[in-house]
Amino acid sequence: MNISNAYELSSPYIKPMNLDGVPSGSDSEDMFSSVFQSALNSLNKTNGYLSQAENEEIRLALGETDNAHDLSIALQKASTALQYTVAIRDKFLEAYKEIINMQF
Image 1 (tube, rainbow, N blue to C red):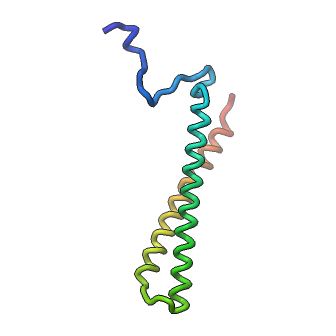
Image 2: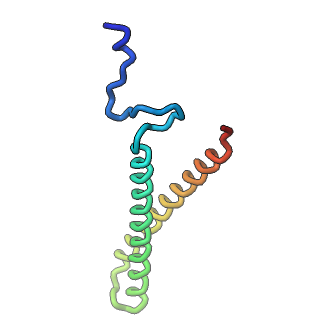
Image 3: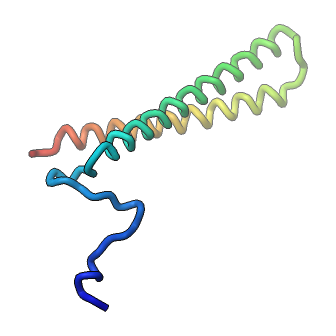
């Protein structure tokens, strides 16, 4: 084994970095855009679950349905999605505060 080859990185997941330690090119922008779009999709899905739960509550209250099982499922989906969204928000804020406190 040649010693110069031992330190070559050929993984598709490892991107070349510039002097600032940021992936070179627009890869970092694409990665941020991808993460941001994923967060927006998650938020939209959570809003959809909350809306479904509210609609099921209204239908049950108006007597349009007598199936409490659908209401229970909708409420559980909404609750789980909201907990997940809040956890992501908390982690994002924690990371943001850590970045703000970094010394350059």
